[in-house]
Length: 543
Image (cartoon, rainbow, N blue to C red):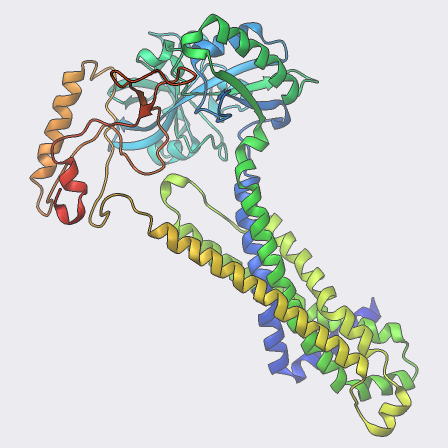
């Protein structure tokens, strides 16, 4: 320990003697470590987010899939779910939720819109989530007529009720209906950012019993010893039986079972691997640059090292001393790299739209990662220069002073070649990325998006049961918008026909044409619009 302390003090003195060299090396290392730690924080949040379930290895997500195209659908229909529940042997419990989007919340001092979802009575039980206060839904409360209770998130409890426990039982007006708050979920429980949880029976409309309406997300808690592949094989057999029993709605419908961890972050793994590969190359460039600086500095210190060897120092002591200096540089770069990461993450969080709910942070795992990268950087930067510098020709150096050997030239040239090669690779990748971003920004939407804004109307079904009532309300909103100062055109559409929108098309046949091979009629996407829709979306406001 005494020897290590001496090496640290001596290394610090040597680095302070060359402040310019030390500053350049620390900044170079900080850029590499900062980039790696930033990407680690982002990828960890996307690929390995906190899961809203206890014992997540036993929880899977089950969704319907088109057997002809292999494309997964949004979810499953509630009638199909009941058949899965009745016939499955490998699943302990099924739970379902339906995502309505934003819900209008009134009551108290102000009205607002919050994220909400409808969940079955056993949703929290399947996830293994327990409330912080109160309770969750009972089986009786998940029946029509009794579904007048609500569970709220910890954040909404703090914001709306000031975190007061005696507010349980308080009535909230949600989508025009009154619900009694019976429970508060613990902090950190995040189920798609929902702040309101309502019983599934509170969801009205024909979709609840429509076998073709596959909008329910299904969670399955597997029995002990059962895995996703076993559940997949079993539910496929059940799906084939449903296809035979209900050909009109299930003829091409299968199932897909995905583990909760895979479902939550699997889609980002490829992108995360590419990002990690890019920043790893950047770290190698930084290490090559610092190694070149240390190699050149080692040549300058040949006389000092030769004197120490002549006085009895061992080669291991020389290598240890030089590696200690590399470690100090790496730790300094790590500190500034973490500060750079915090600045980048804060800036990134500001630019993320609120609807994505991504909030990245430099947590304990990121700090440990930065420490590990700093240790690796110290080895990559200092090992070869230290090994090379510890092998001087003592007699030649003491007689003639510091000289460069052919071995030093070869190693420095190799570092330069590798540095240039990796830099060119990164430059090409950056150019391709910028080109992709540029092309994405120039996608032809079919209209001029400048000075154009959109909004959604989410009308409660129980209040607007008749189509003409919803149409009258929409027409009134549209007229008010048209009278606002600065509004040139205002229009409404049932669905925005943006490029890439995935919706089921309307089938049609051509009179007099021969039937298509396979019997599948062509389909076309369509939407109902008001009269100014084309004028509002055209270039310059002209149809």
